[in-house]
Amino acid sequence: MRMQQLNSKPMRAHRLVVNPEPGRLEGGAPRRHIREAESHICKTNSALPLGSRSSPLQAGGKESVSFGGRSSATPFAGVLPRSPSLGVTGRAGGLSPAAHSVKIVSRALNALFPFHFFGCQGRPLLGWFTVLWLSFCAVDSVWAAGRVRELVPGEPVPLQQFASYYGFSPPEMDERTATIRAEGMELVLELNSRRALVNGVVLWLHQPVLSGRRDWQISAVDVETVLDPLLRPQYALATAGYRRIVIDPGHGGSDPGAIGLMGTVEKELALALSLRVADLLRQAGNEVHLTRTDDRFISLSNRVVLARELQADLFVSIHFNAAQNREARGMETFVLAAAGQPSTGEAVNHPSPPSLPGNAFDASSQLLGFAIHRRVLAQTGNSDRGLKRARFYLLREAPCPTVLFEGAFLSNPEDARNVLRPEFMESMAHGLAEGILEYVGWVLRARLEKAL
Ligand SMILES: [Zn+2]
Image (cartoon, rainbow, N blue to C red; front, side, top):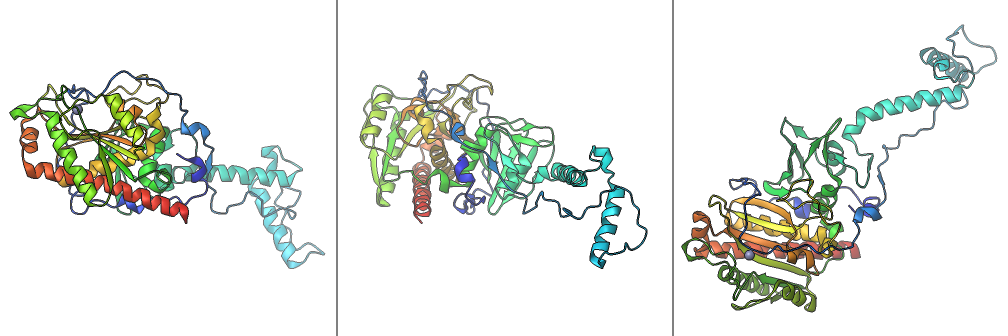
């Protein structure tokens, strides 16, 4: 997360994101969790070039949150008696009533806390400081689970601290799941799993939520690159662009992409859907470019070159999926995995490159992907395979926030029937356009807030 910003900004979830989709996401389409090992015929992933960008955590500082005005200074300074004995024998001569009362209280406290036990005999100030410090530590250890003292770069974040920091209610937990809620938002985490639900939408973390010594723990990279942008888009998008939208219909020409059931062909569906999305965005007054408008082959590298030449502000590549397992169905949306982190389909400890060019847009890509994913789900009611992490070429190399969208599995009978229905494709186009427009709205609001 951006630690410099954390130090100075209020720690509340952003309303833009937390509001659920009216009438759609809360009820939720049936969610089907299908294993990640399924092979994809849609070939968008190739060899990984290594980049050099360092982790944003390395530039961060340490976030500290104070304890509500509590002071470490002892209130007894200057009036403490020298003896730890009780010795209350009546009013001492020459003392005012107030001083006498202080003396009695001090002696009583001395009896309760014998300073020689702490090696402070003859040094009452040091003794009281020790008592107060130990008391502070004891209270702190009890309260720590419920309050955020600090979020340290690279260290896992205890769930209760996360909840408190971002203004969620205390977690409701059972053996397998933890649920935290804020105004208009519900986040469900699963123990020993990378799967999470944000208002019912599946979101894949890089690392599983683990059980720590006192609390469940969320990895630092997931707080930084996945959850923090969703909760506070105003920081992630303050310098993001929005004017030039590039829509990329996958495949084309000699590359048909996936060839599915009932005569479905990925390159044709991707082009038809992309053209409709572009229409809708233009009708809303946006500048939209397409990497292809007819059935022609364009290499992945040339798509990136085009995005660079156009100075694209965001890039959405549109595809359809297929798998050998015909049971596999639904939609999934990909963004680039964070530096050094595994893709969703890889094992947790899979070796990963430290950084890639696309990692410069981790937070904004995450927001763009989430907006598109949830809007298409809301429009189509399609099965939700989640917002995932991958290292496809376009995600790695595009010069702006980038999302790769996979609308349905052409190898699944139900999905194939759906994509042949004009109303289904129209609702998918509307979902994509709405997601992009929602992202553009977040950018505009973030830029406005920054300017004020
Ligand atoms: Zn494809």
